[in-house]
Length: 284
Figure 1 (tube, rainbow, N blue to C red):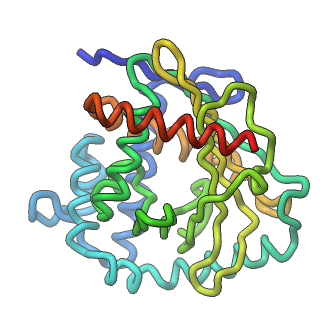
Figure 2 (spheres, rainbow, N blue to C red):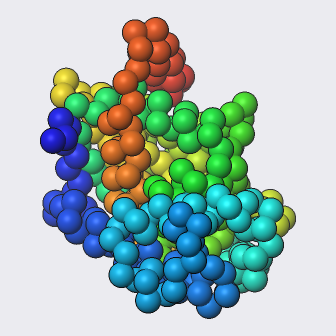
């Protein structure tokens, strides 16, 4: 039995684990269709599965099959076979950026999370493991529409192929950490850590004018998180609404992995010091 709790709320309504798993399985089915249309085999434990077999898999087996397939495919081939999709996404997001001004009239989409017995330190360890492992397997298990991931530990930059808001094609982009001056909104009172990133097209470095900003606060029982994505006013409204669902799946899986992380005494001290340092910097 799990000794932790995760509670998600969107637009004032609680979203259950069953609802999140339903969203997640539907997105696996979407990605299975994408692979099938491109003639790419998906294997589970080295056995090729038909589309019909893939659609019948329970969620946990679907996760393993897609993650194993992506890791076997590798980063170079992934970039090659999904270039038509990322080229189309480049065009769409270039047009969105050209019709907007960054920081002006942005569409805000939020997901709120409360945990018991999952701490901010545990979540930071999970995030560090994502960067250290730097493979295609782990990001795939976090969300099926994470097609590609490459992390740079020194800069904190992440290079990603991801479908935003379940809308059309996956985008190939750089996610670069931003500072206080980049915040699209003022952080809430008492927030301990802000994770904020700007997004740039990999093809030409163009700013998409889209921002991610997640606010994290330690509590006596665990933590509170306010997940936020800020889209240009010219972006289709469906992206903002769809990305709430993306965040539900992504952070639900991330928090379940974080719950398994048990920081040592020294790790906890180092993480506490890092949180205090970042909080101090954010107040400047």
